[in-house]
Length: 239
Ligand SMILES: [Zn+2]
Ligand SMILES: [Zn+2]
Image (cartoon, rainbow, N blue to C red):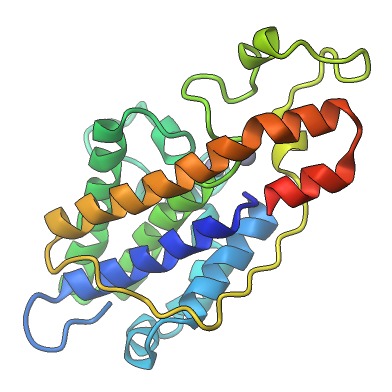
């Protein structure tokens, strides 16, 4: 994940979740890139929402936002990135790669509902883990390598954009997204996306879609720059 836009969704998410959770009174609110985006998003949350997260806040940015990538090694937390009743789907592809909007919405709504439910039950530990899963989804969708439904490695796209000799037989996923990401969103003011899971998930889906569109607009220029061995342009497009 390399795109700046991703981080935006991130905070919306948290905000949304935190805000949506408590309907009444005071409602509450890639590895390195995943961690950097999540941390930056958490830092712009209002103090009272950070307080609700408490000790879980640091873990969200250090660990929980990677739960969907660690489902085979971190068995204890794998369930926070799985859908109940689907024990065979340990690795839920839609948490990493956008599909049709209806499917994306369903995934967002499911995990947001779980996060909100956990918060309402005063279980901040579980809530933070579910939030980590949603952060991961939002972040992955903003990456230029996660833009082609069903073609995570661009093998089909390479038939349209034949590789150079140097790039032949190389999987493009890594080269397209890898790089350092510095996130600077200190002035961002989080927005409330809704007061119910339905409403917030719907709005979040649309915001995430803007991130997907942004990422898609960079994928081909990045691949062309990789073919041209023009690392500067790769970097510019990634940002
Ligand atoms: Zn992922
Ligand atoms: Zn990736």
